[in-house]
Image 1 (tube, rainbow, N blue to C red):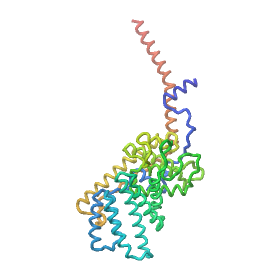
Image 2: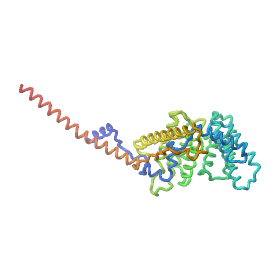
Image 3: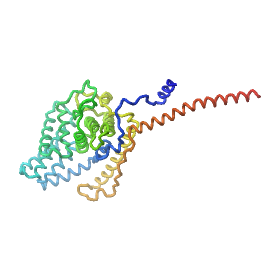
Image 4: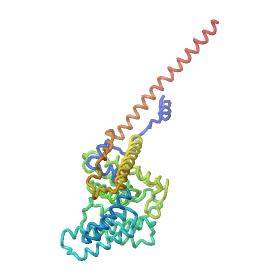
Length: 399
């Protein structure tokens, strides 16, 4: 009988043992509390403006700086616009112009200190972005070192801006300059330098939470939406982020970490790779990305992530289509207070309030019920067929 039930379990796809994985009962909605911006980062539901937005801003700011060259913030607007448009040389040139103006001001003034921070942060970002866009040529690694030095100067002035984004940007840049070995390793090294295993010493909850918010800032405010390495690091940070959870919870925000893992795989399928020189590519790279610990998490989370990504892409398309129509009419949100009149912001979809293990056990119960129906139904069907056959034979015999 046991062999029969075992065979039936295998036939129906019911796992015989599920005790090997760590898992918890936090629902996606539980884990997302206090960090809606991180959910938006993982799914792509954050603002990414069309090129025309930056072209018009650049034209306006350029004209304004001709008549008001002391407008230090204007140089940042012009530089960021050029960087967003992929015009790295121009972006860097705007920072050189800003530096010339800054040299005329007293460093001790608070507003000048803030502007110096922005100068160094932007220049460092523009330098590394240009290097990446031009092919990430390691023979030109001095450009990345120059970027590192600028970000370090920005951190000296203001270490906590943008939720500490520059701290993790600096780590990422140093990681590029002095990359760890990836070839032959089971797991791809991550920017944070944290192990994905359970045995090694892990960061505390506050460190992990800081890393989550800093890396999320890199994606929203930087250029990391298509970075396998940043999402891989975000996966590690989220697995260790237990800040705000009850003391007896296992793991961190594993559901959100799973979304980061899925985003890595999505990027690899789109042809993206790690910045590590000796990292594998394609399916081999996927094999070096450890999945967060779950029991059949894919049952609940894969379709949820697919749905959230599709909704985010649709939201992004509708938003940018509205913007493009207004921009083509010569209107811009920088100068037109009524620019967004008529736009309806659709609320973000709610995350499920069922946990991955609960969904898994619900599936098991459903399959068990199906199995019982099969066990009961097959003999009943056989009896019915035999009885029917006898009736037919008797009817024929009477003839």
